[in-house]
Amino acid sequence: MSNLKKILAIILTSTFFNNSSFSENKNVAYDFTFIDINGTIHDLKQHKGKVLLMVNVASKCGFVNQYENLQDLYSEYKKKGLVIIGLPSNDFGSQEPGSNSEIKNFCESNFGITFPIMEKINIIGDQQHPFYKWAIQTYGKSALPKWNFYKILINKNGQVEEVYNSLTNPKSEKIINKLKEML
Image 1 (cartoon, rainbow, N blue to C red):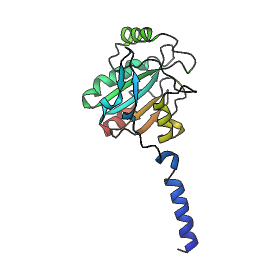
Image 2: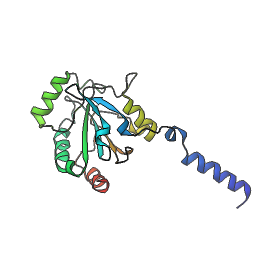
Image 3: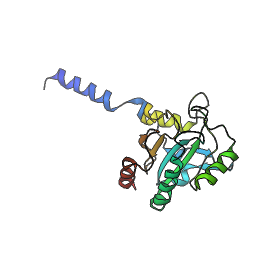
Image 4: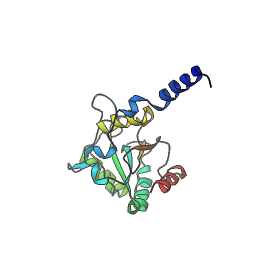
C-alpha cells in the first residue's frame, strides 16, 4: 500500500469512526433526573445496570393503545431488569393537553399502568429536557422523537442501544428479540 493510500485510509477511518460530537459527551442515561407524575424527583441512577425503554407518550394520540402493550411488556420483563419510563409531552400535535393529575388518572384507569410515568416535559424546542439533548448528542438525530410513542432503548451501560419509531409496537418481534438479547 502506498503512503498516500495509507494516509487516506487513516483520514477516512478517523473521520468515520471518531465523530467528535458523539465522543465528547461522557454522560450516560443514568445521569439524568425527571420529576415523576406525583411530583417526586425520579433519578435514573436508581435503575443503573437495568435496561430502560424511554417512551414519549400522549393520551390523545392515535397510538395511545400502545400503553396496553407497554404495560404487558413491563409486567413480563421487569423482573429480568426492564424499566419502562413514560414521558408525557404535548409537543407533537398538542395531544397531551391534560394536567399531570389528569395524565396519571388516565393511565391508571384506562390501562392499569404501573411503570413509572413522569410529569409532562418538552422533547423539542428551547425547553427540551436534557435527556433528549444527550440522546441526540450521543446517538445522533434519529434519537429525537418525530411523534408520540417514539421509543429509546437504553442498554445496561446507560447508552442508547436502539430507537424505534411510533409505528413500532412495543411488543413487536423486533423489540422483544432485542430485549431478550440485552436482558
